[in-house]
Length: 506
Image 1 (tube, rainbow, N blue to C red):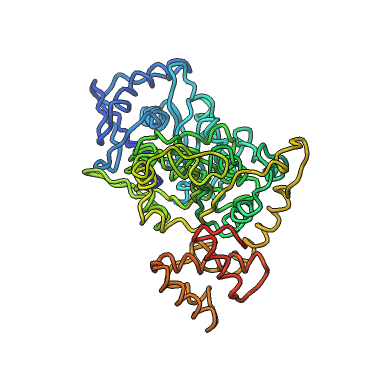
Image 2 (image 1 turned 120 degrees about the vertical axis):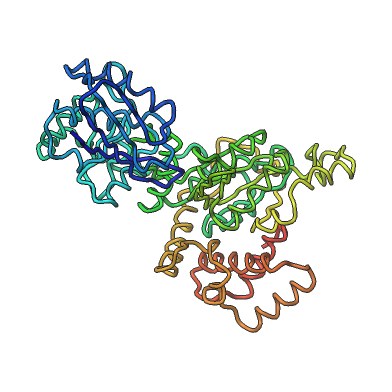
């Protein structure tokens, strides 16, 4: 008898339906074909033990299992459950009319329980897109998929649960996970209210958050660069459901979504150490890197000048294209990587160049080597440069007092500016000013004759590149949005120029 059961394989975020074809005929042998790796080939022992716990068995007959398409390499142990159900159905040990209507995933333990899998969310979305009646997943994995529409998500703790669901799916409501209700966070560990002084840097980061612009903070040790960067999540708006699904799919592939119990709603804040390897930043064929885990959120590069030159240069593609291509000899994976880069660094190796209180001990060659790690093309992709000065003594004294605006107040202005952008870009495939493509600049960043002449003179004097010019326009658009203005004025452009050139004066 020949039976078909369906499961799926993930390659990056791309999901392919895998058909498990099981044929049981006279004879004694067990064949598993279809370009399976060792983890799948070893499934016979896991399945045999698991079936025995519930009174079933692998029949002593000729069993051929084909994982189609046969030219697609399958990896991992998540195919166990589908193979087990295929064997039971093909050998007549269970009767069900629903085996071909469900997408089934899960690794079997020897006692018949199901272990969670990676990539459950994109697999569940794929099941909905392909019209499957339902998707049966291990309990932990099903929890992260509870908000998927278009198909019914069932959870199973054991192989017997899968059999029960397939026997009568219309009465299996007890196996449907509850949807998680998102409650916005009201308190943050890092709040701009606790930042003493630094009015210019705070305003610059507000503009960066409002338009999703990249920014770098340069200043002496202890002036508050890292603290202010960690405050940024507290002023960013929550992700839309579409953004939450995009980001959660990446975390699901990486196996980091199980603890969330549903979609990630708060924008990610990734803070890789400067010793991180190229692969940990860019990702591999089967695992997204830090630039992708920061998708729709913030990638914070603290002490960016301490990163290796090669590690920094891999940021150039995602900063420009909002995605990263991971290529190997025979395979290629594309991960989304639309993040806001926030970097922090000292002005020199010792950290006290141009400090009014302490003398710099670095040679000119050491300073050049230190800052030279940040290439011109990389710096050209950073919209806002902020020179952070040491906090004045009168601002430091009284640590228990709140002297600055709270994050909730700033977040209100940021959300208002983001709402303006969402309305402006309705129908486009981008959502913030920083993402405006070159071909749309003339439409969304219109300026008058006076402003054009100012920019012509400025570019002529400073030698700004075409990319730098476009980023000045985008920053100007964001500043105008924060002011609630439709037209970009000379004042908005002047402020954008100061932010781009690291001039601490508004």
